[in-house]
Length: 365
Image (cartoon, rainbow, N blue to C red; front, side):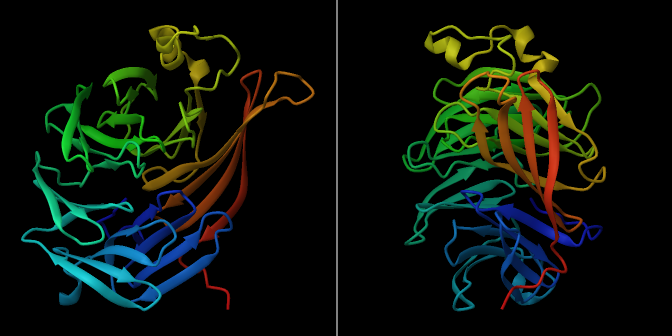
């Protein structure tokens, strides 16, 4: 999530691949934080950055400068070692870099009309993909070794998604998700599902990648709103929930594998295990919960579902049916951790566990 505007103090923010850490870029440098505690782990004052990506909890960062000084050109990608405080390698391009993704095997660099796929160890170029104009650097990337997919916009006129296998270097499928151009995309942690939202922001859809078929459609609201981030709950199969943050300042939770109140029991067939009982079920308000005014309207945000815990039974002795931990970064400078609970009556509660001012945080000695 990058912010070219000077209206917010944070220029970019991103979680690492397992959501255990996150990094922010400011006009002064970058800071790395622990997601569990919110503690500042590392910081360096070396200039303004508009893109920073971590590789899990390693010392490697992929960083792109904001162009406020010659050494931090937006056309140069620097692979930076946080322990040594030095650049390991630099890659230069003819045009500005609009996005970067990284896994243990691949480095992805997005330009406005091309995407470069590198071997992350040798930095050998494996493939260059010509793309439609992608000025915002929109993409989704699955770091899963079983489903190593990259998703890119396939059209500037409608919400089509190109899904590309970055290991086999083959196009996997094209998904026609929305009538309007795409605004947000995210893979599930296992790379089996992709969630998408268009620039209208009223409908969020989930597709099963292996079949390129639509599994769920959710209505976020009636009026248009910009979707800033999408995040599935962690799962080895179908995630329990999908989270979205929007320009209205709200956080939305949609039910997927988790049956809120047994109204939509699925059949035992394979199709029934991934599809809602009907289209009506998918658009039913019982599948959608909203936390209003989580942050100021218009403030860009990035949120992830870090943990989910589902109750084994339906006993009223344990009224909580699902617990989730949600972490939110706002470009206004705050990190918030919420505890989210749903009971068997479809009643939800949000509790702010802790909040950190990212701009004033100081590392412990």
